[in-house]
Length: 218
Image (tube, rainbow, N blue to C red):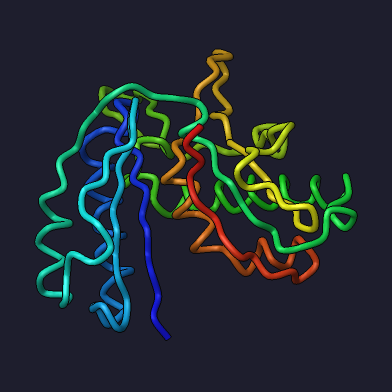
């Protein structure tokens, strides 16, 4: 069955060049599992900072060998950081009346726990995951620990994604920064974390199918 894959890459200044390369590697690894071509899987890449920019359209490539070098060459824009652009939209695949306060709380707990576990495993890969402390003239990297209070679900879900019979959840995660700075975990890191731990999210939501998760460009 033909599949269209659209990747939205957060290219804002807070991401950094290294994390952007990690994101591109994730895109390459994911697309390598598909047969690329107009009758199979088509791929589109859009990066955003202050404004979204399409790098290439869905129908550009006929083979994986054509696609992968172009992903490698996607430049890092390093523009402004928007809170909305660092949010994530999730279609949780359940009726509105099923998404109770208890389900919402469970969702926030699971996201916080899974992000903590993800950052513990990838503390050196993502600047967003680590906190540095100076000990004996050397830098020691420690992972952030998140809790449910760091997961903020947005009131008034983005209008383009609302449907009468489904629940679309928009949320972001803020860093548990002891200085009180209101910094946001980048949307691409949330996307990676949620895709790698999708089963846990489905379990938290009562085994409902997660139909789609993607950064929200407001």
